[in-house]
Image 1 (cartoon, rainbow, N blue to C red):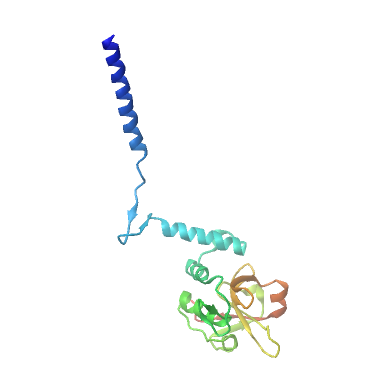
Image 2 (image 1 turned 30 degrees about the vertical axis):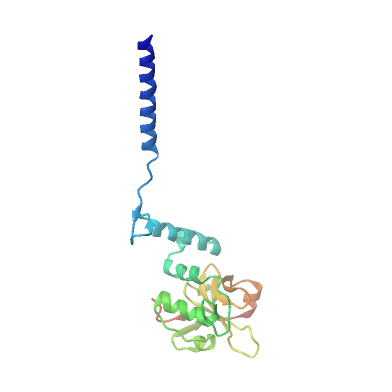
Length: 196
């Protein structure tokens, strides 16, 4: 009887020892790669962020995520999207259309463009053209939103009839070139000659 009791205690002890040991192995945390001492990132975190950015803007523009190639451009847009509009503004507290285009070109392409939509339109570095069917990513789109002016608004063409701009109603936002409002205000397009 004592031997049976001893065997049972031994089996129970062995069972708990094995089960506890195996659960410790299962509970092992995944390896984390540390950088800069405090913060941690997985090796592919930048790729994951870029893939999410491509997906986000592909949905906005109604294109395949593989069509979003200029990730530097979309990082810039994502950083500025929803910044409020401010006439004469040039910061995250408020920015106007031409300052936004100027900053975008400088940050993404390292190309300087003039400060106002009118000077951008007439600048010798901007080649104007009328046919919207020739638009490619990076072209400027000019509009007349104020009577008595040649041009009073500018945006940056993305793809699939979408452009990004600083709108007085929505701040930095993406709009459709063929929407009734923008279609009625359209003047011309312009291509920056130095664009890389």
